[in-house]
Structure formats: C-alpha cells, structure tokens
Image (cartoon, rainbow, N blue to C red; front, side, top):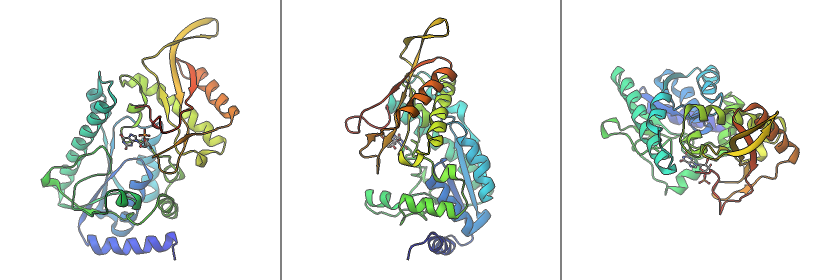
Length: 321
Ligand code: XMP
C-alpha cells in the first residue's frame, strides 16, 4: 500500500532503469513539483543531474535564496543559477497588458533556459529532461507521454528541435498531497514543500500597471508581511493562495503622521480552493486582516490603503491579471 517510502523506492528504481548513465537536466521554478521531481531524480542518478534555475526577478522575497541555498543544502544537487532579472525587466519595460506580460515572460524564459541547456550540452550530451507533471495534469492533457520539449512552466511553448529531450516524469501517478509527503520524506525544506501555488509570471501579474524594480520592491515588502502574518496565525494550510496585488496606477488620498498622502492601494486576495478552477474568498479573522493592513501601511513606503478582495471565482479570477 501507499507510503512515501514505497513511492521513493519504486521511482528511484524506475528512474535508474530509464536513465542509465545518461545526463539529465531539470528546470527548477521554486515550486514544490519541480523541487520534488528533481530530488527524486538526484537520489536515483546523483550528479548525472544538473538543475537550472532561471531567476527572472519576479519571485517573492526570499524565494530565490530558498532554491539557491536551502534546497541545494538539503539535496546536494548541482545547480546552475541564471540571474536574468535585468533581461526580464528590460523586456517588460512599458508593458501593461496582462497577456503581453505573460507572452514576454514565457518567451524570455525559453530563451534563457535554452541558452543554459546549450551550455550544458556543449560539455557533454544531455539526454533527458525532468518535469514535475502530476497525475491531475496527465488526466487533463489526455494522458499522452512524450519526447516533447519543456512544459514545466505553463507559459512555455517548447525548445527548438535540436534541443529535444526525452522526458522523465517521476510524479506522474501522484496527487499534490502525495508529492508533499514525498518531498518531506526526502528532507526538503518546509518552505518549499508547503509553498502555496504561485504563477509562472510571478509578481509581474500582481502589479497592475507597468512592472518596475521599485514597484516590485514595494510589492515584495507587502507580500512578505501578509505571508509572515498568515504563517504566524497558523492558517497557512487553510488558504489555497494569498495573492497580494499592487494597484500601481491607482492613487488615493490618505493621512499619515501630520501629512496628507497620495499613495497606492494594495489588495489582499486570500482564497480557498481545491484546484484553482473555482475559489472562494477566505474568511480570515478580522484581527489578522487588521494586523496585515496596519503593518503594510506603516512599513511599506508609498502604500496608504489596504483593501480586501471579497469576490469568488467565478466571476473573479484568483489573480488580478
Ligand atoms: P486564475 O487567476 O486564472 O488562476 O484564477 C488560476 C491558477 O493559475 C495560476 N496562474 C498562473 N500560473 N502561469 C502560471 O504558471 C500563469 O500565467 C498563470 N496565471 C494564473 C494562479 O496563480 C492560480 O493558481
């Protein structure tokens, strides 16, 4: 019967059989699926695996460090980090349309990942690509198995033909809670194993308006406060996701200290859901909301108002863009 130990033993054996002595590449996103998939493959074939982490500069506070430091410390995985923040921000300059943001980020992601893959390939041939596909993804896409290109990011279209890899998908039979159990068993940090779902385009689609470094810094501070207070309240696992959104093109009047301010609102968007297809706004305790609101307006410069999104999905989506 099902235990995470059995799954690990079974998958490690299957990966060894499939991969043999070949080289393997895996893109890490910061999320639980790719982290657990890579850890399983590493347990099976060790240094034949190289992971690539494209830091697009759109992650939340501390998340890049979680991958670069804590995850590597926990697993001993070979990690190639590509700091591509300037490139992504450059490509996003002046862009406000949500779908255009997604397209640009998907395109840049592919280019950067492809470059990293070519560099590895130039050392010696890479045969396999690891993907953190889960059982629900398999069902949703009709169950096909592939020699296709990368799909780890759902914005990502594919790599060129001369960079085609055979896929290794060690999580194909698992549900999310099982993936978490396996991740814990493999010794991955809780911050990764219990991370809420987070969109590939990251904070770029939580800034309503143009994405700039300054706005990302503000949003990161507000987001960190919401996350810290949610965790402190013990309610992390009751909430599916807790987007914090910066209305960068909106200003409202406030009063702080002795002066009138004209600052930006931040939206709190905590939701409960089973699968993100539908969602309800989370009835978090008012004291918790109050604490987050007070801290954000006191600690984040330029933000003078905090509002709570009380829309279910449908009609609202979880993200604002
Ligand atoms: P919505 O906003 O459509 O989101 O209710 C449903 C779920 O999908 C996530 N999301 C994305 N994930 N790339 C992603 O990888 C995207 O472009 C994207 N847009 C939304 C969202 O965070 C939620 O979990």
